[in-house]
Image 1 (cartoon, helix red, strand yellow):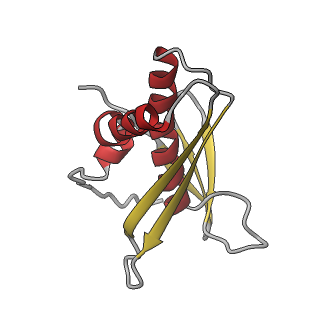
Image 2: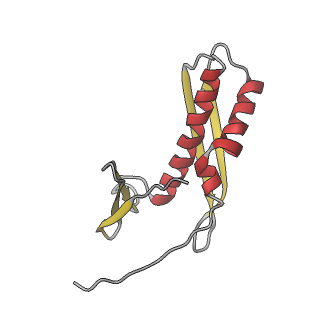
Length: 137
C-alpha cells in the first residue's frame, strides 16, 4: 500500500491552499463570482475525477495506436439540496477527436477507465476516518 498526503491551510475564511510533500500548491476558495479566484473543494472533486478517468482513457487509446487530435471530458455534478450538499449524481461526457477511432472501442475504453482503473472514482466509495487536536498558542 502506498500513502499520499496533502496539508490544507486556511488563508482566510473562504480561502485555503493545499500543498503536497513536493510543494505543489493548489489554491481553493468558496467565493461566488465575481470574487472567485480558484475552484471550490466540490469543483476540485469533479476535476480530480475527470482528469483521473481521462489519463487512463487517453493511454488506452494510444496503446491501440489511435491518433488523438483532441480529448476533453465535461464533468457535471448534481448536488443534494440539503446539508451536506453532496453529489447525488455525476456525469462524465467524453469527447475524442480522432481520424482512426470509433465509438464502440472508445466506449469500451471509457467504461474500463471509469469503472476499473480510475482511482478517484473508486475512492468515492472509501471509508473515511478522522482525528483531531487542539493546540494552545
